[in-house]
Length: 160
Image 1 (cartoon, rainbow, N blue to C red):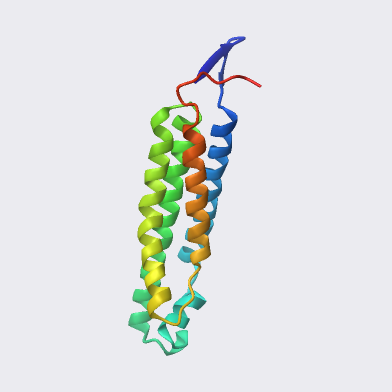
Image 2: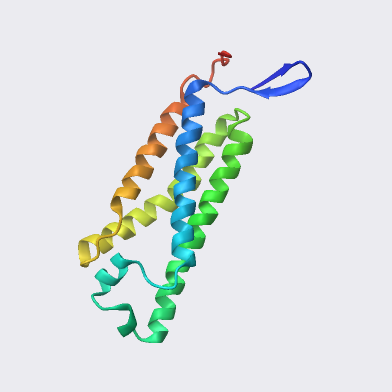
Protein backbone atom coordinates (compact mmCIF):
# COMPACT_ATOMS: atom_id res chain seq x y z
CA UNK A 1 0.00 0.00 0.00
CA UNK A 2 1.67 3.15 -1.19
CA UNK A 3 1.01 6.79 -0.55
CA UNK A 4 2.68 9.46 -2.68
CA UNK A 5 3.25 12.51 -0.51
CA UNK A 6 5.59 15.44 -1.18
CA UNK A 7 7.33 13.47 -3.93
CA UNK A 8 8.34 10.73 -1.48
CA UNK A 9 6.98 7.21 -1.68
CA UNK A 10 5.78 6.33 1.81
CA UNK A 11 5.00 2.80 2.84
CA UNK A 12 1.94 2.54 5.02
CA UNK A 13 1.14 -0.52 7.07
CA UNK A 14 -1.76 -0.97 9.42
CA UNK A 15 -0.95 -1.34 13.11
CA UNK A 16 -1.85 -5.02 12.88
CA UNK A 17 0.55 -5.60 9.99
CA UNK A 18 3.30 -3.73 11.86
CA UNK A 19 2.85 -6.04 14.87
CA UNK A 20 2.81 -9.04 12.50
CA UNK A 21 6.01 -7.74 10.89
CA UNK A 22 7.76 -7.64 14.27
CA UNK A 23 6.44 -11.10 15.23
CA UNK A 24 7.84 -12.56 12.01
CA UNK A 25 11.06 -10.60 12.45
CA UNK A 26 11.50 -11.88 16.03
CA UNK A 27 11.15 -15.46 14.79
CA UNK A 28 13.68 -14.78 12.01
CA UNK A 29 16.19 -13.20 14.39
CA UNK A 30 15.91 -16.06 16.88
CA UNK A 31 16.19 -18.58 14.05
CA UNK A 32 19.33 -16.84 12.80
CA UNK A 33 20.85 -17.02 16.28
CA UNK A 34 19.90 -20.67 16.66
CA UNK A 35 21.34 -21.46 13.24
CA UNK A 36 24.57 -19.58 13.93
CA UNK A 37 24.95 -21.36 17.25
CA UNK A 38 24.55 -24.75 15.59
CA UNK A 39 26.83 -23.89 12.67
CA UNK A 40 29.75 -22.26 14.45
CA UNK A 41 30.24 -24.68 17.37
CA UNK A 42 32.73 -27.53 17.36
CA UNK A 43 30.90 -29.68 19.91
CA UNK A 44 27.45 -31.21 20.01
CA UNK A 45 24.74 -29.48 22.03
CA UNK A 46 24.29 -30.78 25.60
CA UNK A 47 20.92 -32.33 24.76
CA UNK A 48 22.52 -34.18 21.84
CA UNK A 49 25.06 -35.68 24.21
CA UNK A 50 22.29 -36.55 26.68
CA UNK A 51 20.43 -38.30 23.84
CA UNK A 52 23.57 -40.25 22.91
CA UNK A 53 24.36 -41.06 26.52
CA UNK A 54 28.11 -40.72 26.07
CA UNK A 55 30.67 -37.91 26.48
CA UNK A 56 31.71 -36.13 23.28
CA UNK A 57 35.31 -37.34 23.53
CA UNK A 58 34.25 -41.02 23.59
CA UNK A 59 32.43 -40.78 20.24
CA UNK A 60 34.66 -42.14 17.44
CA UNK A 61 36.16 -39.32 15.35
CA UNK A 62 34.31 -40.31 12.15
CA UNK A 63 30.98 -40.36 13.96
CA UNK A 64 31.83 -37.04 15.65
CA UNK A 65 32.55 -35.52 12.25
CA UNK A 66 29.26 -36.82 10.82
CA UNK A 67 27.19 -35.67 13.81
CA UNK A 68 28.76 -32.21 13.70
CA UNK A 69 28.18 -32.05 9.94
CA UNK A 70 24.49 -32.88 10.46
CA UNK A 71 24.26 -30.20 13.14
CA UNK A 72 26.05 -27.66 10.92
CA UNK A 73 23.61 -28.53 8.12
CA UNK A 74 20.68 -27.75 10.39
CA UNK A 75 22.38 -24.45 11.27
CA UNK A 76 22.78 -23.54 7.60
CA UNK A 77 19.14 -24.46 6.96
CA UNK A 78 17.99 -22.31 9.87
CA UNK A 79 20.02 -19.30 8.74
CA UNK A 80 18.87 -19.72 5.12
CA UNK A 81 15.24 -19.95 6.20
CA UNK A 82 15.59 -16.84 8.34
CA UNK A 83 17.27 -14.96 5.47
CA UNK A 84 14.47 -15.86 3.05
CA UNK A 85 11.77 -14.81 5.56
CA UNK A 86 13.58 -11.55 6.30
CA UNK A 87 13.91 -10.65 2.61
CA UNK A 88 10.18 -11.28 2.14
CA UNK A 89 9.44 -9.12 5.18
CA UNK A 90 11.51 -6.13 4.17
CA UNK A 91 10.43 -6.04 0.54
CA UNK A 92 6.95 -7.29 -0.41
CA UNK A 93 5.47 -7.54 3.10
CA UNK A 94 6.33 -3.93 3.99
CA UNK A 95 5.04 -2.85 0.60
CA UNK A 96 1.64 -4.28 1.55
CA UNK A 97 1.61 -7.24 -0.82
CA UNK A 98 -1.16 -9.61 0.24
CA UNK A 99 0.73 -12.76 -0.70
CA UNK A 100 3.85 -11.85 1.29
CA UNK A 101 2.49 -12.84 4.71
CA UNK A 102 1.51 -16.25 3.37
CA UNK A 103 4.94 -16.62 1.75
CA UNK A 104 6.69 -15.82 5.06
CA UNK A 105 4.44 -18.38 6.78
CA UNK A 106 5.31 -21.05 4.24
CA UNK A 107 9.05 -20.38 4.46
CA UNK A 108 9.09 -20.47 8.26
CA UNK A 109 6.72 -23.42 8.64
CA UNK A 110 8.69 -25.52 6.11
CA UNK A 111 11.53 -25.35 8.63
CA UNK A 112 9.66 -25.43 11.95
CA UNK A 113 7.18 -28.25 11.29
CA UNK A 114 9.73 -30.95 10.42
CA UNK A 115 12.20 -29.69 13.04
CA UNK A 116 9.52 -29.83 15.72
CA UNK A 117 8.58 -33.37 14.74
CA UNK A 118 12.23 -34.45 14.85
CA UNK A 119 12.92 -32.68 18.14
CA UNK A 120 9.81 -34.24 19.64
CA UNK A 121 11.00 -37.70 18.53
CA UNK A 122 14.36 -37.09 20.22
CA UNK A 123 12.56 -35.96 23.36
CA UNK A 124 10.26 -39.00 23.39
CA UNK A 125 12.83 -41.67 22.54
CA UNK A 126 16.05 -40.60 24.25
CA UNK A 127 17.33 -39.06 27.47
CA UNK A 128 17.90 -35.81 25.55
CA UNK A 129 15.88 -32.75 26.48
CA UNK A 130 15.85 -30.57 23.33
CA UNK A 131 14.39 -27.05 23.46
CA UNK A 132 10.77 -27.74 22.49
CA UNK A 133 9.78 -24.45 24.16
CA UNK A 134 11.54 -22.58 21.33
CA UNK A 135 9.36 -24.37 18.79
CA UNK A 136 6.25 -23.50 20.79
CA UNK A 137 7.34 -19.84 20.86
CA UNK A 138 7.89 -19.85 17.09
CA UNK A 139 4.45 -21.36 16.38
CA UNK A 140 2.72 -18.85 18.68
CA UNK A 141 4.50 -15.92 17.01
CA UNK A 142 3.84 -17.23 13.49
CA UNK A 143 0.18 -17.87 14.34
CA UNK A 144 -0.23 -14.39 15.82
CA UNK A 145 1.46 -12.84 12.80
CA UNK A 146 -0.76 -14.81 10.44
CA UNK A 147 -3.92 -13.53 12.08
CA UNK A 148 -2.70 -9.95 12.40
CA UNK A 149 -1.31 -9.68 8.89
CA UNK A 150 -4.66 -10.69 7.41
CA UNK A 151 -6.94 -8.42 9.45
CA UNK A 152 -8.50 -5.84 7.20
CA UNK A 153 -6.51 -6.73 4.09
CA UNK A 154 -9.26 -5.46 1.84
CA UNK A 155 -9.51 -2.07 3.55
CA UNK A 156 -7.38 0.99 2.95
CA UNK A 157 -5.02 1.68 5.84
CA UNK A 158 -5.58 4.81 7.86
CA UNK A 159 -2.47 6.83 8.60
CA UNK A 160 -2.27 7.50 12.32
